[in-house]
Image (cartoon, rainbow, N blue to C red):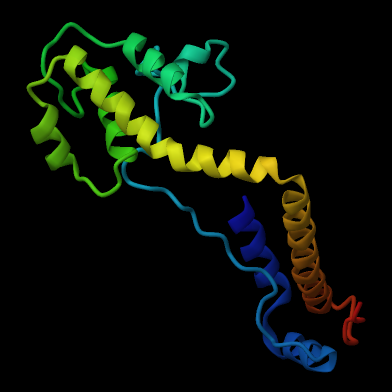
Length: 199
């Protein structure tokens, strides 16, 4: 939707000599005011499934907390969730078997929390393991991946003054960019032809 809106706006208002003339009069570059957003989708782990049902997407709105890993879950909670998550009775792990959605899901999670590894590398490590052998490895990998994130979160939360200042600075920086973008959009539409007032 955002891409469609940007494209439509640029097609309607940002073409031809009249647009260039308005930009020159307003003292701004004659480039379109909006940046077209690009989708950021990783190939592996883009869709993480529930720990209680490998065919349903993991969601924070799921009533069962056991269905997901929360970023701030402590290590013992993560290990318990992984230990009790749904699996099958087949020994050995494999990717992309439609009959084993939980295996694919847990392997995808294992890969996602170890970005330096490949599918082939992981499969070589775990293909002959039982679930009882694999689950502790998965839990440890998740805990290790989330540990620096959790440490940073708690560190920032302890400094209320710092957090408030970061938010204030960010809001001011965003306000400056937004004012410039809004002025450029008004110029493109012919609503403003003079230079934007500096604040």
